[in-house]
Image 1 (cartoon, rainbow, N blue to C red):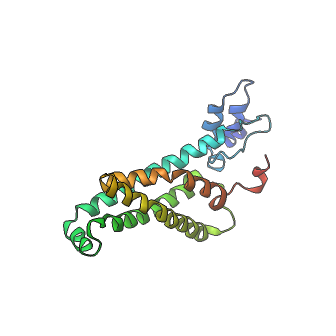
Image 2: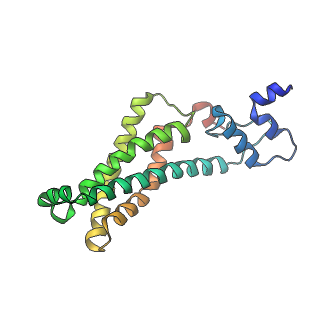
Length: 197
């Protein structure tokens, strides 16, 4: 194989030694955008670990989710600091004005999370729904997630005396697992040719 061929296929160098490492395969996967999602696309000579690709996927999803969590909290923080807006909403909702902010901040984070998941985490898993179909499904899951999160947010703030920002943070963490499962199974399912491996 020529050097040019090796440069085209980063997995060649990772799998040529008899004793390669999983880390070398991941580095090779990151070097090639086609393989960057790491969903069981290994050279024929490599028998992949059953759990490591899933752990890598969970790590990437968690990293993107962490960025979305930061954005969610930041938007809510900024909105709470706008006293005039808080006072206006408080005339209708009383002390639970932060519920409206949780909805607004969640929708802002949803757009960023979807784009990052589409571009980084689930690259290579396009499914049949198309970009707008996947976004609509992702947004509907986020909206359904709010139906679970808002009572948690309200309960923690009202009964446990937690600050709304802390309650919002905790409610997002509590529902992380459900979002991950739905994303991997329904929004960005594994392609049929790799699902059987």
